[in-house]
Image 1 (cartoon, rainbow, N blue to C red):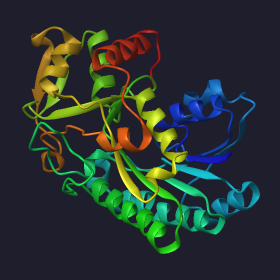
Image 2 (image 1 turned 135 degrees about the horizontal axis):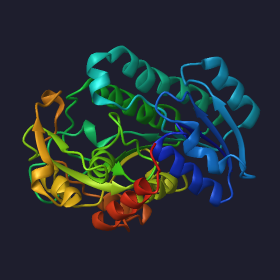
Image 3 (image 1 turned 90 degrees about the horizontal axis):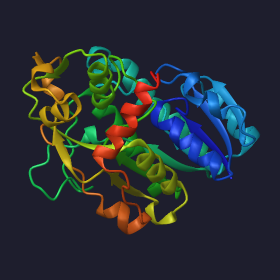
Length: 315
């Protein structure tokens, strides 16, 4: 199939691109490199099925129109977004434009060519989990940051195009994804940052009390979920979660990675108002509709990520 992947030079996008290319599809990547970087896809650039890489923004309607008119995409995996919670609090306009307005521009092109839309949302749209069965897709949402608010707005637009126009669309909400190619600096994920600091003998900084929990999904499991959602009509018009189904507190995670409680330091939370105290995913719907289940345990995933960072893989 002809496939457009927005945000394909990003962390998750890179793994989605790799899987789509391995499956033999013709792939075009659009990325403005605000979060992603070309080095993420360096090993994919010579792949015979990578038909094009455009450095550009989803806010460029002329560019989108040209890409869609020329290539008539069968599926658009829409991962391109502003993804930093703190940035959205400091500068909500940029996040709203990229995540909500940009998604509208994508939808308009997909409607024109009947291109299926796989929209990457986030677990950050949910209210905290209050039980051990986990957060399913009917769980209440709570836009505790402009990032979450922008994603919820975009989700509703994506689903409206399914109901109003019959356009095949699906909203996917992966939980906290980690693994190789995740940034290890300030905008990176907690696992990558903790591992890098541990390898360098530095302290691991925990915001707040560290009792908040996360459901950590290994990136190759996430990419498989993302790709599968594009090729299964059973999820059209649906919202679908994916997670490990096990949560771990940030305190426990830090100790697992550092192996030494004296290396852990507590610092003031920079955005406590947007913190979700407990995140635990219920992926039953993904299993029922897609036959998807995670394959990589937290311990195995951390070991793979540690090895990648140790080998010099700093994104």
